[in-house]
Image 1 (cartoon, rainbow, N blue to C red):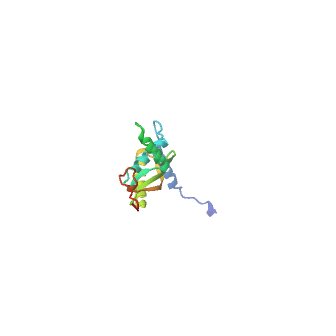
Image 2 (image 1 turned 90 degrees about the vertical axis):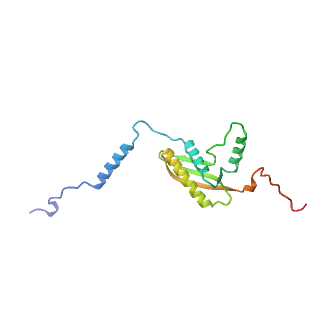
Image 3 (image 1 turned 120 degrees about the vertical axis):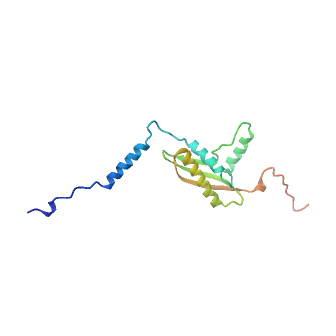
Length: 162
C-alpha cells in the first residue's frame, strides 16, 4: 500500500517571484553606471530650485526679510550679484532631494495656486536637470509685496491736517 501523503507530486512550476527578480536584476544592470558616478552638489540643486521658483509669475522674491536686506546690499556693490539660492534650502541624497522655499508673493495672487505652480516648476526643473527624484517641495510664504510700498515709488503721503 502506498501512503497518500507520499504519492507523486506534480513538477514544480517556476514562481513569478523568481522571474520578477530576474527582470529587476536585468533592469538594474542596464541602468548601472559603467564608466563612473555622477554626484550633484546641494548648491546645484539649490540654484536650480531658486531659478525655477523665480520663473513663476506671482513670486516677487525669495528669502526672508534679513536675506532680502543682505541681497539688496550685495546688489549695490559693483560686480556683485544676488545669490540664485537665496531663500532655498535643500537636502540631497544619492537618488532623492527635498526642497524648502521661503517666498514673497505679489499682492492679489492666489497663494494656493502659486504654491502649486512653484512646486510643479521646481520638481520639473530639478528632476530634468539632475535626474534626482524630488520627494517634497515645502513652500513658506513669508510676506506679501504691495506695489505702493516700493522704495522710491515717487508717491508722498499727505497728512490728514494741513
